[in-house]
Structures are given as structure tokens and as C-alpha cells.
Image 1 (cartoon, one colour):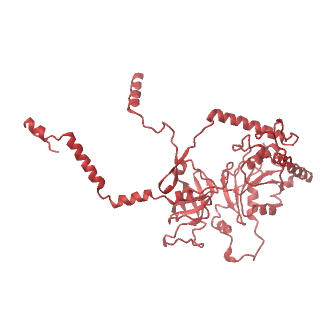
Image 2: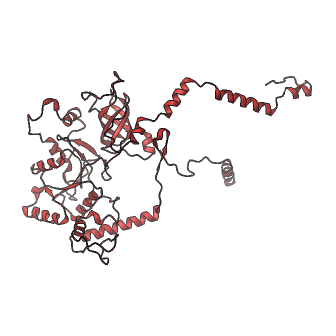
Image 3: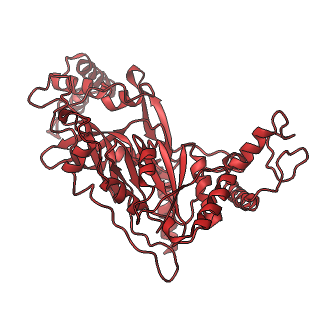
Length: 468
């Protein structure tokens, strides 16, 4: 562009030297076209290909449900492990499959003697997982990235698909539930036991009922409770952690499974875990030295983290247990099993239980309907409240507990219907990216992240001026 600095120059000369608007547009279009069709920088092209390439974590999460059968391609600073414990914003992850050795990055096979296997990593959760509301639970199989093998720190980048989940307490990939109560100190309450059993039944995970502190009650009480619980539809297992009685039977049930022990405070959950983990395997010489148990190796490497659990006494004032365990932790057993020590709570919330599936959570109702087959209730949505044609009578022991829980759930569902309505969108949406990979992203609230228009901004300024 040519500028005329002499103000006394002729007018026609100044008009000729001033470029027109159309010429400027043609010039900008030609410049942008030349930039568009010019060869791009190789660094920019490499960065673009890197961004378009799907990550191993997204490919992993979009694969088949049996995610444990195939090992994704990992980087040297990545690994696959399981969450052993969670406290505050930090999680302990035990490495199962590390990435390739930095000294041999081209080697794909995993060396079983790799010293990184079994390493205890202190990790934080990636911020993107928090934004898309993907919660990381104890027991999850995760991908850890940005690992510092010297300081044993990392970041959880993604989570494998779960095959089971317990909401209260929050534990993932659970194989077995153990509902544990004490016969005395604190005293066993039938309605509270019913709430825990209903919560365990709602998860769909196999469960067993263990009653501790059998040494505090006479034999007649044990016999009465055994007969009573059998009428409920359960086979109780009596044990005494203090006297070391019945622990072998409990140990046989827990063998090779990930078990969550749930129950109120003070029943002896942590004491049972300490007793089971202190029992040494009496079978010697049956296995060779090179086939040493992997869980024992983890115990030796992580003795500080996997030490004995804190235990407490029952309160003398209230007669109930004190909250000694404050976080969820997954502890290894000698027989290739895991025990989840969870904080005790007095009453489960029953958030997964609805008035339609509540009858199926009572073994008495299931057995009565099964015995009356082919005669069934006249209505498919029968709640067994004395409806016409109902095959279930009200002469069983826990019928009053069933009615009380049903009223509680009805009140909760009516409140949720008034508060949230019938339709509620999920906070996460999925979009299909390149190569058909599904990626999760947070669903933004409408008009919350939209930029304020100038008209609205000016109007707000005028309103503020009017206030003065």
C-alpha cells in the first residue's frame, strides 16, 4: 500500500494512489489461497497426525467386554494395574502389566520376572475422568500413565469396563459379598440385618451371612438364630475371631475371590481380616519354589500399605461400634483372593431398590412363588399387599419389615418424581471420532457456557447505572 505524506499534493493524485476496497479483497483472497495450497510445515503435520490418532485407552474402552483377555499397546511410562486403596484424592495402584522396558522399547512380550510387576504406585485421577463423571473405584482395573518409576507415582488415565459394582461401600469387580454381624456387642437387630441383606441382594452378587462373636452367647441362642435365619432363606455361618473358631470355613469360602465384607461398625470386620491374613498355609512342600504365591510377594513388597488393619472397641455408652476404618482398601490373601475392608455404617441407603424389585429381594417371597407354580399372582406388578389373586400370604416373620421398607421406598420415589421428573438426561454424552472410536465428553448445561451477548451486557450496564 502506498501512502502520500505530502498534504499539498493534487487531489487526483491522492485518489489514484489510494487502493480501492475491491482490490484489497482480491489481494487478501490471493494471499489466503497461496497459504492454503502451500506445503505445510512437517512439524505441524506430525502434530496433526498425533492428535487424530486414537489413543490406546479409547481403543481399549471401545473393545469387547472381556477386556482382560487382550493387552493394549502401552508406552514405557504406562502400565495396567488394579486400584488397591483410595484415600482423599490419592489412590494406590498395584502394577500387573507394565509397559515395554525403556531399554528395549521394541520388545512387545511381557517378562514375568520384570521387577516393575507388583509395584505400588501412588496415583491421582486424570481431570478429564472427573469432568465426564467417570468415577474410579477400589477394585477397578485401570491404565496408569506418566509413571515415575523412581518416585513410584503416576496418573490414572482410563478405566476398564466393570463386570460388577457395589455402591455402598463403593467397590468394583466384586465376586462375593459377605454380610457380617455380631451376635452380641453390638446386639443383633433383625430389622437392621434385613436392610443389609436387601442391599446385598440388590447387587445381584452371591452373598454369604457370617455371625461373629459366637462365644458371647449360649448354645440355645445359636440354635435359635440358625433355625430363624434358615426360615428367612439363608444358611448362617457362626465364627469367633477371638477364639479362632470357624475361620477355616470362612477362609475356604473366600478362596480365589474378591470379597467385600459389609456390616455395621463393631462387628469385627477388621479383626476377621487380620485373623485370616495371619493364618499361615500349613501345606508345605506341595508347590515348587519358583511357583511362589504372587500375593505373598505383594505382602513382602508392600508391608507398610498392606499391614494389619486398625481395630477398635465397642462404645460403652451406646453399645454400638466406633468408626475405626475410614477408607476402603483391597487386601490380598494367601490363597489368591482379596478382601475389601470397608468403613462400617449403621444403615444402607437402598438407593438401587425399587418398589417393583423389592419382593424379589426376599427369599421367602421367591420360594413361595416357586412352590406355588404354575399358580401365580393375578397381576404382574403385584406387591403382595393382599391384592386379589395374590399367592403370597402375610404369615411370614419378616412381613412387617417388608411393609416398612416398601413404605420407605415409596416415599423416596415420590420425592424423586417431584424433584427430578420422569426424564433426566445423562451428564455424559458419547461421540464417534475417527476410525469409529467412541469418546466420552461432558454434557454441558444449556445456556450456562454460552457467551453473553453485547445487547444483554449493555442492558445490564444501564441497569447498574439506574441503581446509582
